[in-house]
Image (tube, rainbow, N blue to C red; front, side):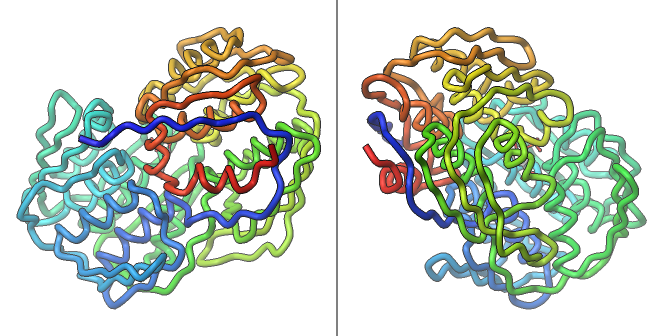
Length: 429
Ligand code: S3P
């Protein structure tokens, strides 16, 4: 049982300085999995420091993959497409990404794996991977569509699949399964989601074809290990960007940040709301766009996030919503029902915490309406065991009147263990 820690956040005047982000969580998971099933060695620099990505590494080790961590570098010895039967359940911890994406790899093995998660992950829906993987030939037992999963691997057959939910985790899971299947698998997504699965597969040597919202992969292709430096996590940077946006005098520099067009919608939205962001040193690294940001605070207008934007901003909505009361016109979020099945019910968590700070919030099944021009007070809040809620409300607390106590603040370590120290070093009180 983990001990719960409460962290106090005091009001700030400004945010100033430079911050290098640990490697992107989405890319770290994918690189660790693909390095494990590649041939030859991989060297992954700036690997995510988050507990979620450590869960992926732990599972890969249980599947026979040898790796070593040297500071922020992970050296992996590829095992090839055929892994080794695990002696114990694969512990995915809090990580939905680990369970969903890795299920695509273990489904194509000639052994049975059990995948387990913590109390929060055990409540999250897994039918979205169970259904298509079963159609490919795996047999999967679950607790009514929720973890734990018992996956009886098989020689998979290719699948033509139209995903009912926009989910990059599911898309990646099926592309990984497609790599192990016989024939050509085609995955169609209802709208474009982050493409790190496709980009990473290509970087490790696989060939894929994209046509509009369809991606095709031929089974049996061998991967080769690679050396890579993982770009800084854009969703982690979102907390500092939004914190800087709260104070017109802020100045922030973020080098070597992931700027993938499938992830960078946040930058457009913040700029439309009035934040000054300039991007320099743009380069492409293993198919991913990377750049350095210079940010200057400004008065923020409001915005509406709906339709495709809600999918594109799904991990950034908590922090945008948390700063919404401080904007001029407020923020409305719609079409974001997926937030209810993340690490917590994020719509309910945001509404609860904002109300505790004295804000007026309207909660909808698929989003929130948060009026602008509100003054919030410090309060006692809960992370609901959710890293993004803990960090989002640390940001909201910077402009509240009085101190805020965040219970369960240790949840931040799921994606960003050094978050609170880093924030403290950047704020001017
Ligand atoms: C992720 C996709 C998103 C996101 C999660 C990471 C990924 O989840 O919320 O934090 O790395 O593919 P869904 O695929 O469930 O939308």
